[in-house]
Length: 545
Image 1 (cartoon, rainbow, N blue to C red):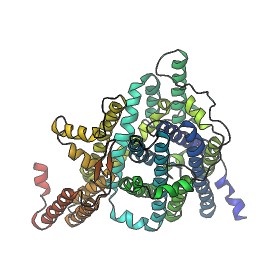
Image 2: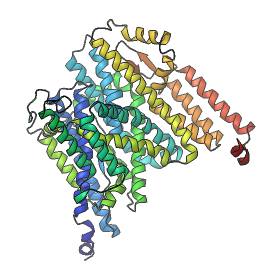
Image 3: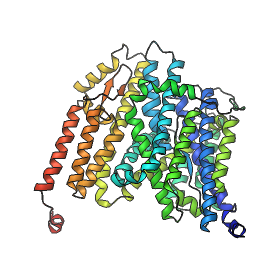
Image 4: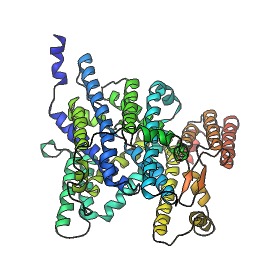
């Protein structure tokens, strides 16, 4: 009897259809971006992406979405209230971080080595990405048992500003520049996304704004293509249905084991470790957001499910962790329940198994869909300011700076890579000579740029945390964070790098960044001095100044 009475709580409704379209567009965009980045800077063959990476990614979506659908249904029956499943998919920030700072640099470094063919360099880069994804899953799984402690010691501003630094440099700038390079295709979808989410309106029939934006952008791209103008769809000489077929997930355990001893993995641990921590804390914030909306989910099983999803991806060929998405309140207000999540997992499982994501990627250009990513980056950055106390805003800005430095150096590396391919930079010492030349001419502070770029996820967190506790006049805690930053610098988790012929490679080099360690110790000493010697300025004096 109780089960029958509770059945309306778990029924499938119109809200599930709206929620499915919204989450489907979000995850489809992740697959389109993976396709573009893996076949671009990572130089993976398109067929390899379709047959090895996408089935593994889809498997992780099936695992996570079906779990969260089951959990929402179970808790709805238990609580007597209709609960919305936590939205789940490929982690956008990790996607960019692993491509730009782990996989692509590994490929560029190995491809410049005469001992490696381009095919072998791409495979090793993929293997390193698998290990990065596996370690992220392990961190998140372990975090299920440590989540409370991590939340207590790390200020929210430190975490959100670190994400915002990536969002500004590596998501919003990339795609806003592409939007203004392809305005005929990209600006109309951008306007639709901004009207939908910034103006907070609904379209006729309740159609999701993201879906309308992608459809309009795709239609514009094909009209431009059919008119023979530049800037439309580019099929790259491939047939529309190239890659379609049955592609089951293939275990990649051997490749994972082969990469575990790779110096390219441990040399980039300063990216992998903090990204795993950020994924963990981001998931916790999403659980908090759902609880504020009335849906209370247990932390430990959800974090473990996230970790298992990421590990499943790695074991079956995907380099990209999965996570709970920001935005549960939006799906809740749509009226979505549990079914939208289950449908999303099944949908992407079918797309990947039958090789249909490649054809979709050829039909739907990234320019038609990237407005959603621009909006996500804007929201991540805005949240760093709106979800933290006003007095923490300067600390948030401090946390943005290392990410901007990393983006600035990426532009230098992309320029040198193009010059090397054009034959204007030759010789094994080309990049070291270029760095030396920059230090003497146009960029005399290039050493500071490289120092801040190396392990920037760590340094962003430390700088923002120090700023938060200084703003609160908790000088002793600020000194402890500065001391921890000194230890991390000395060990080599941040500010430590090696200049190779192909790239500036982040490496754990104990003692290399000793000047930075000394600098952080000086910051700790200043904070302690302030604790004993400085006095708060009176409020009246502050207003008068």
